[in-house]
Length: 445
Image (cartoon, rainbow, N blue to C red; front, side, top):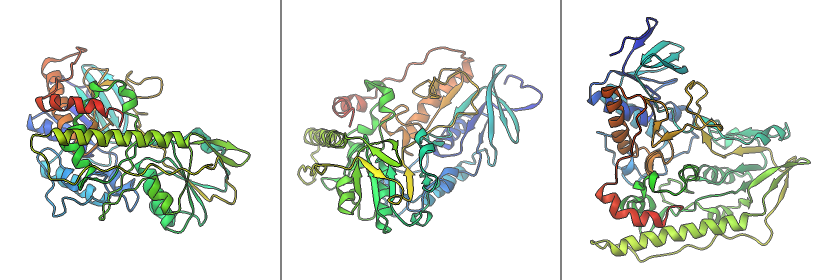
């Protein structure tokens, strides 16, 4: 190992973040006896402990919740884990592997140093030859600047500081954003007795079950979750596609805009701004919903095609289609905020927090430049991001394949002292080649 500056402790690799991705990488490093530490600002699985609302459950069934060397071992494979259960699963993984986690350690700065990187923390400095950024994609809420123009009397929240409807003032609620988070919160708040208005932009409509099976089962067996980022025409756009409108419930219900309107939620177009004390909404709602319906049917067509061509025909019900999204003749374009709305919930997504990363790998918008998790700086890697290498990269089980490939590149870097050689993503497996035609058919679904 290269000698570190006298004021730093030395390891080969520093992993930042003790969530599922960071711990999966730690397990891979330990298997190769690579000296490393995992730095965590809070506790293991910190975000699952502190930044999730009370009723949140995974969008994927329990049987899909597994990490390298740790399958799901519970008695409810078709259920959906709560945030506390996910935290427990990740904590158990860390304990089982004896991961070298330093909790309560906040990273203040990561900067290049001789032969590697210096990682400055509130508990001292580390010198290392490689850094893995596993702090996740949800570091900061991605809220619009217009929040500053919201009348002071209106309470504003984001999903990471919303816990349950008791956090809200009595009165109307405007939920902005209709991905998985937005539709779940709109549903929960409406059921609490408050009138909810949901501002809808681009979204991905998806049924909870299709032809008798969970939609994620179909996505898995048909190979759609293995779709690789290099097979996508526009990788940056693919990484920004909203999460599908799904909710994990015991009754396995579908939660789309039709279901929300049946519950009394008012659906309006994309939030466009504030003028004279009123929220303004785009007139494109009908077109946006028509596009989501089109992509839904394209996905179902592809699943049906795959099932029909499968060598072992499945014993499943026949193909089905769902009613188009119902949009009234004149959706509201303006909503007076004073009086009608007491709370705005900004379910407009998240972005990583790289404020501490002092390495020239960020673009003008603060996004990390990388090739499938290999950053544009020798020995710097990222994990746990949407569509990092595959469609499933942001799921817990997606860490298995991503870590297997990225850790091999990291080992090569440590063994060879690589300082800037290019990296080609591995070629597709035979299974991935067989499903490529199907993947291309639903590339934007």
